[in-house]
Image (cartoon, rainbow, N blue to C red; front, top):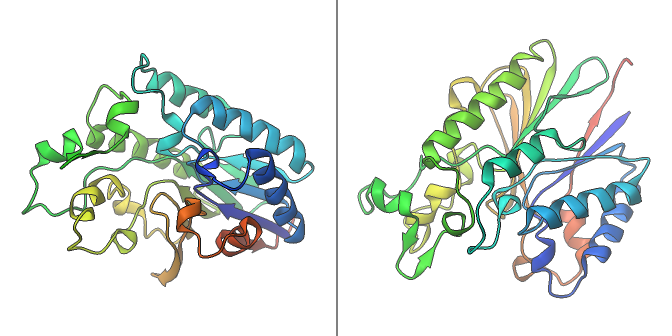
Length: 277
């Protein structure tokens, strides 16, 4: 029996009551208590790509022999607003990192593949009667600015980035056509997980939550699970014989308790797989 754990949105540098080292300790305990063989982190580990990579490598050392893999979230690409932006270089770092799922599918046994990717939002869902596409692309609403606009520079529109990333996901998918697939993305891939509208802020900010560029092939019968983060809710449902899951740990101020161990237990999704290998 292979037991795979999935969790997203650790935001280790937003923790008020715990240090990153304590997050590592609690993740190790959670993985051991659940008898995991693999732990998959679905992005937004920190607000700095250097901190994220350091954390991932330290966590792997502590988790061994449990296998660790990750995908970045939008926060994991961030650089200081005043820094010279190297967003595509950071993307390349994540694609080539040995613990990243962005490079190629993770094959488990002879029947399962895990495909992981950041994905990107493409402004598929927002109040189009209230806001223009130009306003959305700028990313500024009243006095708030979507921080990706200050901390990243893709040198193209969000829609173009989403299409490129969707093509990268599809390329991985084409490599595992004979296997059951668990698709792990950071951005939301279904409108069921956006913040319900009307909403005083998310009529606007839903534009930066989800993509619909994967819809043409999301209902493929080989995909059994869609697992995502980003939106900081914990929910799951069945649709079209598939399980749709969002399982963010989220910011400490959003927790229902003040105990990291309890929040990890409630946000960790564990998948059991019986392999003939």
